[in-house]
Length: 413
Ligand code: FES
Image (cartoon, rainbow, N blue to C red; front, side, top):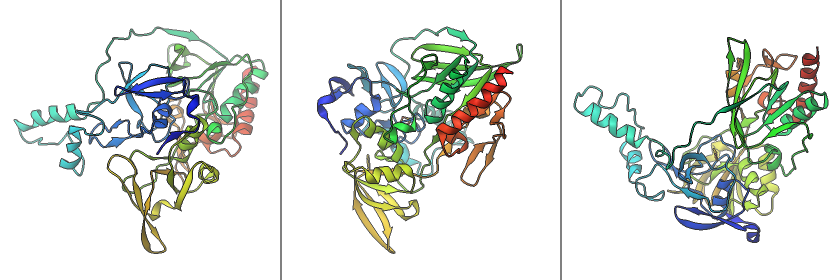
């Protein structure tokens, strides 16, 4: 079962569906819940299958919950505050026994509510209404939060992503005397460095650093012919008009394909190591699937017992109704059943190109997936540059620095 390595560190507490649990203020809320062995946090919107944290970086929505009366909170990106009240959303009953999970049984091939009984004048509106209710996500907030006003700022450069590449880029730009903002949606800066057991490099004091802040969208204001980036986070909403944008948004975890890959307890090796960074072991006995630097580190971490190591193609199925209990794998042409409580996977990540595309970048298939096309001057769109694993650059910090040098030359011309 998941547990905290040093329970004495838990000086705070949160409630989960009314039960009081120890927690460490400042760690991601999802990590507080995992530490209490709460791997299942909700249900999927349509078929109500059990869901739990899988990525711990805001990419999978398995950690969505209602927090202090606000629905749809990504608890992996929310810092724990002692006294936080976390509730399962989107269930009729409880997260363990959800009456709406019958949808998964009744519609084994999924629900296409656009065509469900579309030919019947009587049944169609009835069933469409029902499907909409079943497929809803969360309830309205307890209290209406007023629309925040956005603060405008026009830095020389905006760096999105506070991992190795983004921090190196921001520090280099600040060193060149450019007014530089760095935004990152994580609870703290560092990105994948944390999962690698490394500390995030210190930021130069003149970098305007905004952790817990998401760059939610980018657009061109045609009146002023300027690019705007909307950033929302702990310090409010910012409408930034940077002269140049450096995207270092990294990669999503690749998800292996086998039955049961969505059960709570199936998570990326990077996510498990991120939890470990916060002092939480996700499992006692785990199956490691795939290859990569994070899988190697999980394998070398003595607090995590790896009972099997296979490729995704060798996994017949993951066993368990509400969380991982075991796995059936092919081993030397025989089927073997393993007793495990987690599956950790690794493989080539999928570049987080959503913001890049909004900025006008083209994406190309590189054999492993889709990647923003980067020119030799590091640009992916006019005045928009990309660095690090977003463009599958090998040494992220060095790449971030090289990109920033180029941006500095361009801006100082
Ligand atoms: S989005 Fe929070 S765990 Fe994936």
